[in-house]
Amino acid sequence: MYILTTGTDGYIVLWKAPHRVFSMDRENASQTESANDIKLGKWYWRSRTHQSSIKSTITIRTSPESLLTITGGDDNALGLTHTEFSSDGGGILSSTTRIPKAHASAITALAEIPSPDPQRIQFASSSNDQRLKLWSVVLRDKRALEVKKEVSIETAVADVSGMIVSGESDMRVVVSGVGMEAWKVTGPMTVVR
View 1 (tube, rainbow, N blue to C red):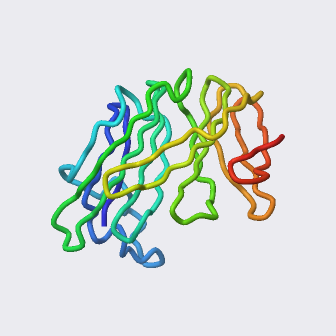
View 2 (view 1 turned 90 degrees about the vertical axis):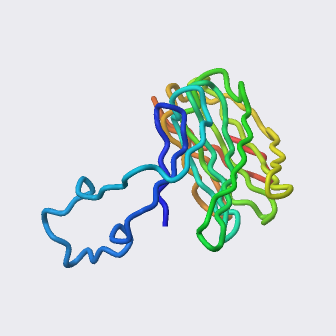
């Protein structure tokens, strides 16, 4: 088991998690035990994805042995890091695709949009530039991602700080910050207010 963190230095970091983090019996846990008592030690793997701070992160499992970590930075870029774990626990293979100038300012919110196609990953990004963008990703092989911006629309929400996708048959992307706005997903990568 691993714990994934992102930080103000632009790195994605994996730490080997102590077994007790995942096996703690909550009902019988000591009142004094806290997250501060857990020591992670030295990082196991890391990858620089942004020039400086990572402002938003989502992770999507692409197979039992791999995941896609999508990050938005204050460098206006998106980072897509595909990480594959060896089945014997012996190592990690990773590749990162950067999309510079994905937005005109810091990317502060990301959310996965469920895809009807299992070979395609969809997500939304938003930024202090007051744009909502929808993206699609196809994993071509273990190292190659095909990323396409599908939609770019203006949002009235200033200082976007969060985003969620809710609903199934009536799916909506909700953007929040100074105000809130909901966009209905009407078809494959199509949205309306």
